[in-house]
Image (cartoon, rainbow, N blue to C red):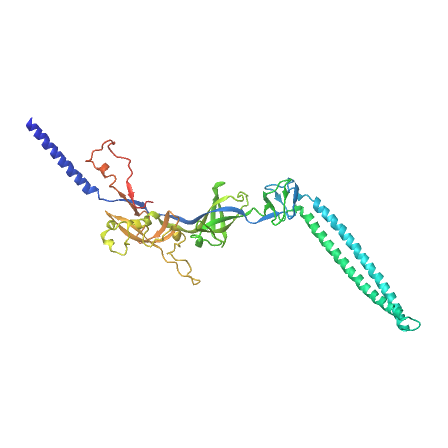
Length: 477
């Protein structure tokens, strides 16, 4: 019995030592070996876009208001014979609505009476002038005879003075009569001006369409009273031509430098999610707006709406085409953002200028712009804009770094960067070709070491391959 116990004890010790040796052997060969997360370089076409949200707006809108106050009695008829309403097609000078004319008609009638009275007064003043002229002639004749006789026994001095005074008074009365004529004429003109004003107000009770177009908004109902005082009340909103329409897009200030008139634009609306509409930039408005310290500019995009599908004020998802590449080498942006720790770089590249001295948490490869927007519109012809004329400076070449697996290490590959769509970026590099494998991150095996160790008991777990996902370190695609 004692010999059997010693044999069992010895066997247990041997098994324990063998297990410990196995654990040490497995860990020494597997625990520190890196596992790379990679992606392939592909060849294809790339379109760089700037995205924004906007609103579909009529190209030209006329706001029709009321210039007088009153109650609405009726609406006019559109060209189809129906009462004016939303969507009605109207012609220029077509009746839109009528306001109660009772007060304005009474004012016009009163003004007509005043004008007639003033015209009669003008005629009376003219007749009075003729009368005063006759009296002046009579007084002048008497005064002439008195002057021939002179003060004498035949003509008393008082009578002589009376003829003289009468003649002077007659002349003054003529001047007064003529002034009365001028006053009567002025009163007539004033009455006519008042009549013209009240007649215009009466005409304003009939509201006509100033342009040919479509009613997109009706803001008044029959029986409603509008008051026109300091502000003109808005009654109808007319779009002149809905076959030509605009999109007003709000573009962030970081992207506005890549927007220019004539630039191609595509957009979609939620009403027709499977249809892509096309347009072109008309202008960039300079009156920027700021909301929570974010500055945006309104960009006008012109587009045709011949089929009438686009309705005013739809929300549009706009894509400004900022650049593109055809049959180019493309890599995931995550491959350009990832940078290995120094101990993962092949020794011959650690001190080389090809290996930027960065840590993994710095993000971004050497020479890579800080944001995709900075590279979105970068030219693909070697980083320079064509022509070189006009005195413009060449755009500097944007550089980046890709990392290729070299056993347990990675080695850098400098590349030139082209356009990007936010996920893929055009690259050019010596020796880089379609299908090349680039590293985008490192998969840590420490988290799953105990599970993969065959010498550790799998208590409570199913033996064999597991579905556990490895922990990734670094930036994935």
